[in-house]
Amino acid sequence: MKKIIFGLVLSLLSGHTLFAKTITITAEFTPSVTSPDNNKFTNTTPNYGYCAGGFATNCVNNGWFTVAFGISAEPSEAILAEDNVSYNMPSSTRDVVVTNRVSGTQRVVKFAINGFGGRNRGYGDQATGVNTGWSGGSWVNQPSGCNGSGYGVGDNNAYSWFWRWPNRNDTTVCSKKSTVDRGRYPTLEMTSFMYLLTTPNPLEMDDGVYEGQISYSVAGSGAEINVGGPKYQTSDNQLIINFELTVTHEMSVRPLETGTVELHACQTGKICTAAENKINWEKSTVTNIPPELTAESQFEITSSGSFTTYLSCEVNAGDQCGLRSVKTGDVVPVKTLLTLPGNIQTTSGSAVRNLLMKNVKDTSYAFFKTEHFEPGGKGKFHFEVDKQDVAVMKKNAPDEYSGVVTVVFDPQVW
Image: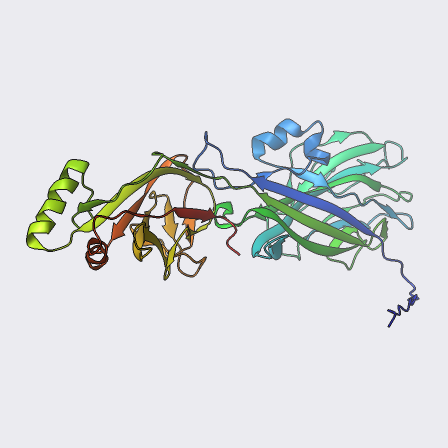
């Protein structure tokens, strides 16, 4: 049977056309050997507007950053004496969910617009130009409710300004009242805004790109973002802000010993030399009490994110790896216990000390998070064969048991 596809064209008639301006805010995290304590994102959004121009030094000194708003506005009729040119920014903090493109893991960032400015343009004379004839004087002087930036530049034909919203609410309206009649100006262009962005701890986030979005309605008045007031028309009716947070973790493991790991007869939890191994086997022959077999292998690990670990075995023995007899083919289990450096902990904040590993990937059992970045932290594997299994091995002595144990460090935790 053929697949039948119906194509339908739908139309919606409306008296208002919606134009949206879309911008993207980006930030990234990559661990640094020179700054191992860093657990903050770096802002990678292009700087634009007030803080990218002649006021860049002022912004750097105050820790400010502005991005393109990209929406212009102009009066639909003449601005008269006693008219207010008003602005209102949604300065309350809003939660934005960002989702990992691959894993689907979600986190929340907190966002607020806390500053806005642009360049006024007009064609007046010294009495009615864009920067004269306003209550409170020049546009560098912020109205009540807002904070100024301290700097403005221009003349009566074009004047750049910037105000800041100190209160975390959506109700603070900052207005300049005209004291004279003027034409259909000032128009507003080259707009930019300042924002607050609070991000999660990247050390607790998966690798990858996290995406989210928030939108605000924009108008001369009556919208979430009010630009100009009731006599103004904006070039766009909506501001859409996309968020892209990129996390690039580091994960590397380097063994400190190479070659075959030999298990020696020893006491529980101890490591014995070859000479001690020989003595302990001789004792067990006399006492007929089998010893425990132990060995250790050390490694260096560099990690900045979360990961899980599990075993991949040449020979499986239940949920452990096994050693196989060359003579009989019998298999005995060998325990693999994991110890990690102190900067890597369990989800409950406990140290990882001699955790018994399994040959299945189980993040509910073995899931670790990096508390702080520490290049080259020391860890170890401790191997044990229990006494009762050594007793089985002795039945067919002399014999040789061997097996390959592969430990997988997996940052793909989803």
